[in-house]
Image (cartoon, rainbow, N blue to C red):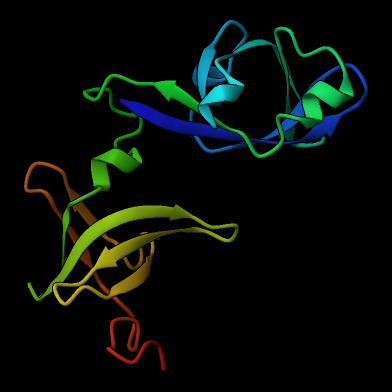
Length: 173
């Protein structure tokens, strides 16, 4: 199974390094030296990580064959995709991969059906669950413990405790 683990940002310096927006909780595993990653667009890759370091809180990578700023800039906005065993689970039992959550039923604490998770959106402020309702419309549910207190992968269900107005048909009040 393929998972997006990062998005390449701007070039960093003149020697072919780039900043990356990390999209994995395990960057040391997925984005370490020697990792070979598929890309989107596919024609850009695959890319092999030659080296990496953290500078001012941002991950900076260098890829094999990318030696100057022009080549690095050409990679901007490329998604980096890792091949992951679908049975693999994060070490922390409170963490989940996006593919584990896709298509799970979403219900309230009292059992009212809300819909199914269509995707997990990674927004700048926080992650949100995009829940497709039975009628076809979607509602965004902040993926925080106060609102999403229970995830049961065996039962294929997510329990939500939404604040007033979050699930109203007309949107939040």
